[in-house]
Length: 201
Image 1 (cartoon, rainbow, N blue to C red):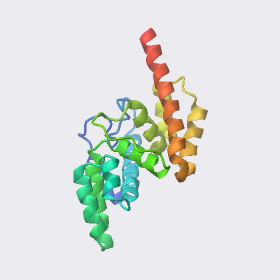
Image 2 (image 1 turned 90 degrees about the vertical axis):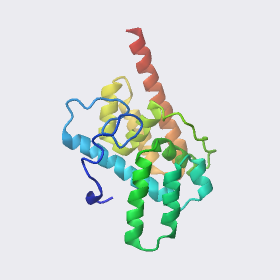
Image 3 (image 1 turned 90 degrees about the horizontal axis):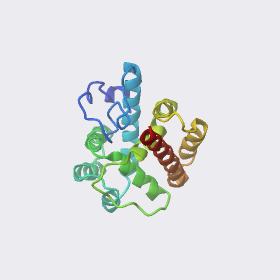
């Protein structure tokens, strides 16, 4: 994704939640954060969306439906397959990215990881992505900055272990489903411990 593809003000009014294009990670606070930090996070999410579109394009309609790709994005993906012009296809990719941005694309990325690793694909659901799934995706996308934010929210987490788990996910695309599952389990554990501590106070 080129810098010209991103408009800093494009997502300013989007709601918080599992829509990862917003400058928060599932409710974590932006207070005291610099504009450059927020912009880097947004750009990171847009790059991840772009990568997701590139990974979805070669797949079939059946796979898209299995992964819970919304109908509007499927229509645009089908149109993109017919386009020969590089410029026109790039424009269509931006349109697909925009349609996915409004969806719960964390779960689509998760199911794509399952598929690429040979696992059974978790059936689509109407439920939004869990906090743990969103955090896992953001740790993968945002790297050390995402990890720093996670540690602010969950200071009892093992920073070294999380960093290694993220590296394992990024190191081998063919094993991403398995390594992603290990990361998800670790995040679930840390979120669970944090919730228990909060309940005890």
